[in-house]
Length: 145
Figure 1: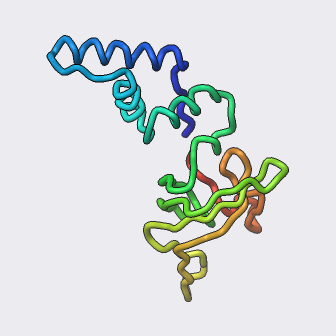
Figure 2: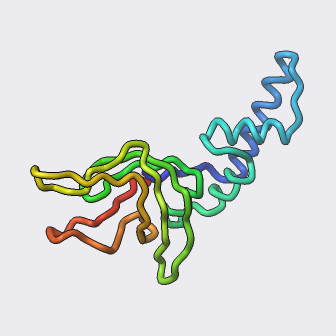
């Protein structure tokens, strides 16, 4: 799920309107405080993060996540939610990622036994898809980003 952000000019305009509306209601805030509030409204931690995302609209979806981000997707065809513990560029448009799953994922498809994993290391491309595949051609890891 890729998020399209407004332009920097539109975001600053939103902050200006917010500041004017707050002042009209008797609560004056600074322009920087209004920018921070606009960032929170867009679901990011601060203005610097939002402005960076807004200036790179054509970046690969992986650019929208960082260490500490909550993610979801499929690992060995099993759905998961988790937190990114490590993320680094690996060259050739690939990235190394470490994810800690909220709940352990059973990585075995046989009915006779199970093997659960809660933390994985993987390689992904800019779209959050692992280049490694299972024997039936399904990528090991697919992030919903």
